[in-house]
Image 1: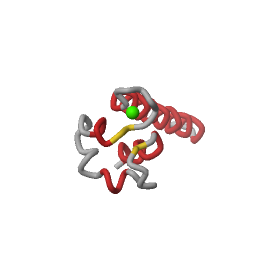
Image 2: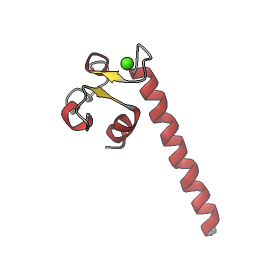
Image 3: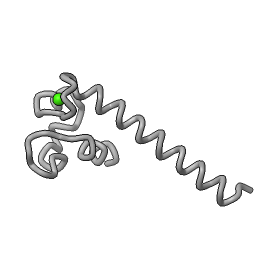
Image 4: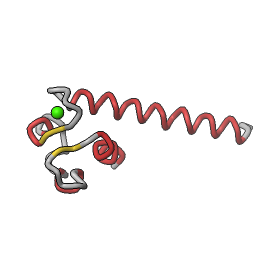
Length: 74
Ligand SMILES: [Ca+2]
């Protein structure tokens, strides 16, 4: 039986692994490395263009890392 502390530590390490994977995917998608994913860059990411209007929460025509993390979480 795992202690609550061990479970909490496990949950924390799993969530930071998921975050690292998101950050890696984000870097891959940001082909010009300007820190934002443009609509053009999004065309290379499966599913991203389809959900663009929902993902681009602030409607600035770019997807930032927080918006992308939300997309990855769905
Ligand atoms: Ca970019």
